[in-house]
Amino acid sequence: MPLVATHPEMTQEQKDAFFANEIKQLHQQNRKVMLSLGGADAHIVLTKKQEDAFVAEILRLVKKFGFDGVDIDLEQQAITAGDNQTVIPNALIKVKKILAEQNREFYISMAPEFPYLRTYAGAASYIPYLKALESKYDFIHPQFYNQAGDGINVQEEDRQELKIDLYWLPQNNEKLKGEFLYLITKYIIEGKDNFYQIPANKLLFGLPANDDAAANGQIKVGDMKKATKYLNNKGLKLKGMMTWSINWDKNTDWN
Image (tube, rainbow, N blue to C red; front, side):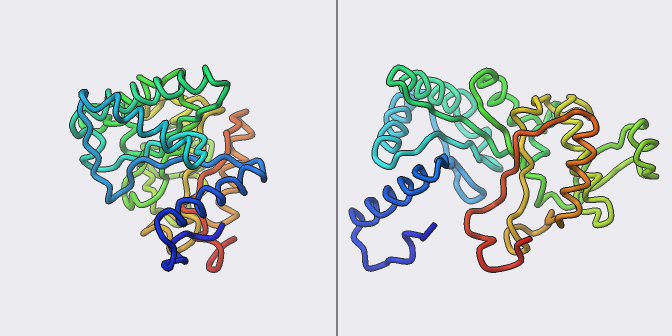
């Protein structure tokens, strides 16, 4: 997928048309294109008075570019800033309803860093979004990367089954990446280790596309195969996988 940024000579109108055509090409390949809301450097603050304007802006962008939905990717202070935790879910529900009346699908997804999925006080900042959109969201792809030493408490039955002599398994354990992916995914599906429960058919692995895409959390093919095998053996069939980010694996370090 070519990038608009590679054409600095274009006017804004030309860039918009170029971008809309890129999305059209992806639609012709039977692919969906989501509008990502947030990111590490995007500090979004919405108030209740801005809810209708926010709905109108999403509808405008959907009409102009052909987006198929919105992915919530709020990070840091933006997660709880202003009235975001109520305004954003309410707005997405309204947009989904309006487009459904036009016989158009509108997908809702989220890409929370995995610590925000914990249910105890001080960590559960994504829980209001998940609860408000419980029957509306289509998939959740937690970021299982960039968390370094953060990780999971290994349950006793899993320590025995996997023969892991650890009570705490951090995300950056190089030897047990497959086991980490398997266990954190299983715990989220089952609502264990203080994670908010998300059904397997709406859960995706969230991983770096290549070595440059994240500070840590990269995995090898063997790690993915191991994690998937463990999950399949438990009858836990995931929705799929998300990689950050598009085109990052085009030239370097893909596998």
